[in-house]
Every structure is written in C-alpha cells, then in structure tokens.
Image (cartoon, rainbow, N blue to C red; front, side, top):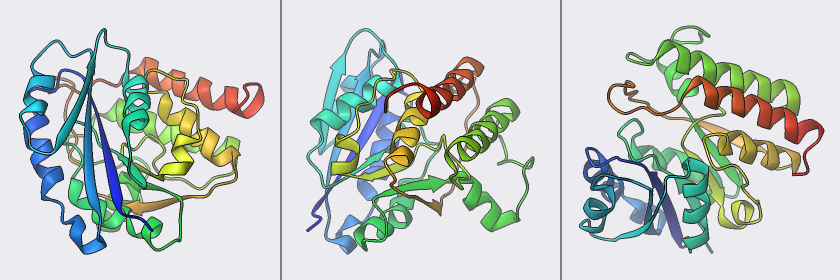
Length: 243
C-alpha cells in the first residue's frame, strides 16, 4: 500500500526562491490520496544561504555538501535518503507548480503507471493547441528548442512517444528509481534515467502540467553544453554503454 511521497529538491544557490517553493510544496493537499510527505532538500555545494533557509522551514530534511557537483549528483543523494513509496523531483526555483502533483500522482496511485513525467508541452498544447515552435511566455528560445530536440532524439532512438523528456517533474515508484544507478552528475542525468527506464521496458506515462519559465538573469542554469551532453548520453546508452 502506498503511504508516503518523497519530494527531492536539488538546489544550488536558490536562497531567493527556496522558502517560497517549499511553502508551495507544503500547501499541496496530499491527504486526498492518504499520503504523507517527506521533503528532502539537497544543497549541492551552495555558497549562499540556501541550506540555512531550508533548515528553517517546517518538515524539511536538508542534506548539504561541498563542492557543487551538479543536479544529477544531488538527485542521486536525495534518492539515497528517500524513504517514500513514490519519489518525485522538484526544482528549487518557482518554474513548476507543486499543485500539479495532483495530476502527476494518480496514474501511479491507480496502478496505471510506474513512471510518470509531467509534460510542459502537453500542458501548453492543452491550452493553446499543437505547435512545435510556439513556447511559453518568457521561455528562452534556445532552451526551449533544445528540449524539443532532445525529446525527438529520445523518441527516434528508443521508440518512445514523449513530448517533454527534460521535464523536472519525473515521478517514480520508489523501487523503480532505486534500482537504477545514476552515473551522470549534471543535467544529463535526465537523459540517462529516461534511457534506462525505456531500456528496461517500463512505459513512461505523460500528463500535462503548467510552467512558469524564468530567465538566465533570474538564475536559470541549463546551457548548450548540457543539451549536447544529453544527446551524447542518449546515444551512448542506446548503442555502447551498459544501462
């Protein structure tokens, strides 16, 4: 019986947003599902007050280390500490709305899926209709197109039908993600875990979610280098690397 959701928050220098984001996470009514929540903030070598602010928030477990190693390393550390039956990844900024947990969780809770991705693209198309080039207001053109390219590359290599591979909202039955060894330390962990899930024969179910993009000036950290690393990771696990 499912009883607890573990929410893993990888964070690097997010002192400006971490308290507000954690308040939004705590505001989600998981009681309707009979779920307890476990919030694990992993301060990935932050040099600001991210860890201290997170420790001041009620019901939050903080794991902090130095130096900065990257999102994949932080997610891996969070999974190691998680005790829930379901695990979801939550970015520390305010781009994603934790109320969307109420959309992401049901396929797992109802036994229809073991892995669910919250798709920003499906959420956008639900509101505005299909379009490859149109994007959320404020979304950076290069980041948006990079995400679409990585997604289409995933589909081509793995025979999937995803719309938003790089989404933050990746949600797993705990036994699925704990059985996967995450080797990537940076943003390419997203491509790695997707490749390994698909190679294991597990279907990834997508549901629409909302999205509030922030600019690089506001602290967005992903780069062209990360997109290239994701493509290389997808190629590697498809052709020569052992999953």
